[in-house]
Length: 452
Length: 164
Image (cartoon, rainbow over all chains, first blue to last red; front, side, top):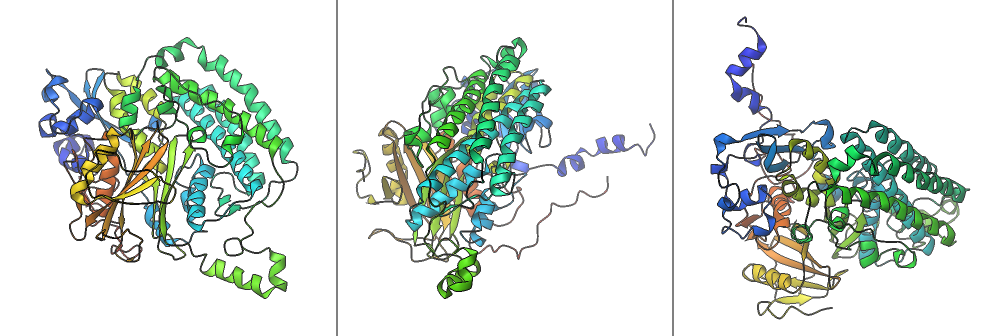
């Protein structure tokens, strides 16, 4: 080969090749350079971690660095669902240690949130978990409302509940789609996105936008439901409910799918609790913890639905839970259609809600309120609050510190994916390389929320 | 409002928190022992851990006797069996914020503590792997601190690798 051949020259200077992508000590280190407790975490020995007393020799006692291989997966790998980077230590085909490296999508949204007023804040949080924007806005709005101490009208509560359940369905449908694609079923990919489109069309009709809605706002929702919404929602529910049984035919009983899912990557309830894992991952281990049922918010205590719980905590349980949660959400949406009260769709408190356009021309007071709200925003009493809702991925918490001004002093979002990602080393452990794909898929991290 | 668990260290100040059952204000020395007593009192999960920089806001409401400091670490504990939430707010210090790591009690705090270290510079002693998690490793400063300033700092790019 000639002297000018690029690949040969690059290989002579590997330090330059790695300098571009290196995250330094954030990466998976060689075993001799890793602290015992960190090594225990990377091999997934969650319950055996006892500070520094953890003995790495109890796991992998015959492993040495020259027998294993550290490889890099991501950040732009098609099945990492975004920019998740995993470093894996492999023994042949089997995974020994895993370390997720995140931050490639970090855009400083918590810092941005301190610069935006409470009304504008919704546009910020809705972009965190981009598959369930309504539920993000809901968690944020509920935190602000608790600080303000205002009540939301009955109709707004039910609209919020219906929209967040529709959003849960669409989020789980995208999960079904991408999980199907990861496992080689590209028809599932097409079907999942096709059904999601029905819900997005309804969102567009209601809120004007398909994805980052900014529909749920402190004090209520942005707009009332459109004319004829009952029929639209009915069609959405009927169609998707019928098609969940087609997914059953396509995936649930399919031998290749079952072989790759059943018994793969099991999680125990104790491990899940220790790691702070919530959502379908926690429920798959048999813990019936769903904030909609256990700590009801909105009007979830007035509707009938079942909390879906798994037994083995394996990939298949996580799949089955999400599929059945779609059906349960449809049940809730149908009850919302029947029980939707009439009335205001947002609070009539003039300090929080802008006056209607017609009032501005005739009322000086309305003009002042309008001016104050859109130049400065409303002031929120001093205090701090943590409010949690059940997102499709688990507990979505919003911690807000208010200094009495029109902008949050500190806004922190407890992103379920960020915490759930800590279960990945445990789930990967001992599995084969091909199982890593199913593990990432069933943990379902949304990188926008992980990195914020 | 609930009371402290019987094994809690003596002298921990408490107050009623908004949307939680109890807010505790331990000192840095009491912090780990208090969380441990909650863990043995059926608080199975540490749902959230974050830091707050109170540099520009002195008027926060604290119970009498708590010595306010610039940085505060806020921990939200959850009991699944009792359906209760408890908030632990520990004053972490002014210039060199430092608290004990909860990793040995709740392994799930690992990523959250790394995040608080990355964005606020709070040191968590006995943390297994206290490295940056969201920002690049060579980043200077801790972005969520109030004196960091947003919009004024040019984006720090990585060092160019030079010609191959």
